[in-house]
Length: 231
Image (cartoon, rainbow, N blue to C red):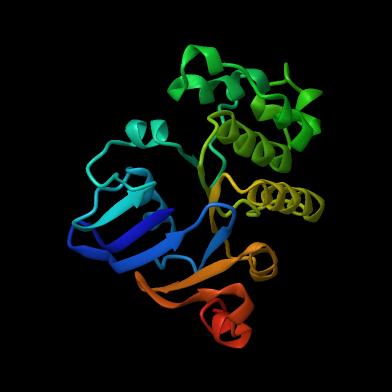
């Protein structure tokens, strides 16, 4: 289980995260909801080690990650699919996938067959440059690249942003399959409420760097959650 305990994060004098705590269990999707600028991406970057925290603790599988650099957290089983995808546009699809090998022992440096089962469109595009793919295809590539790392915690930052509805549905299907396997915790930042609601087993809602609502999806008060999402 991922455990984030009373995390405070600053950008200079700006107090960006305020005593943030959450858990994410294997076999479940935990969604982080909130408007733009409330600290969702900052929280993900803190978990992966890209933003150093001022106080608090981050634990994963009973291991304290708080002082570890990002590459050590990746070796511990964490993988991030960043907002905006951040694929390498001049590399081929296969070369983009191969960048996920960096944290793996040599014996595991191959693309698992289930990647192409989850994302069959990629198999037909292995030699195409990443920059030539559509936005939806690039998002699928970004998720596939993270899965190549064999993560046990998959962190997704707004995977539906700028994506056509048919691909959003495909991405939702893949996330549901991954969660159902039971060996991976999934942390999902999302503004598209219906997408998050339908996938989440648990949720937290952020406002001004704090968690203001949290609970199980089955007990969610949708009206209350939506008040923190509307502008």
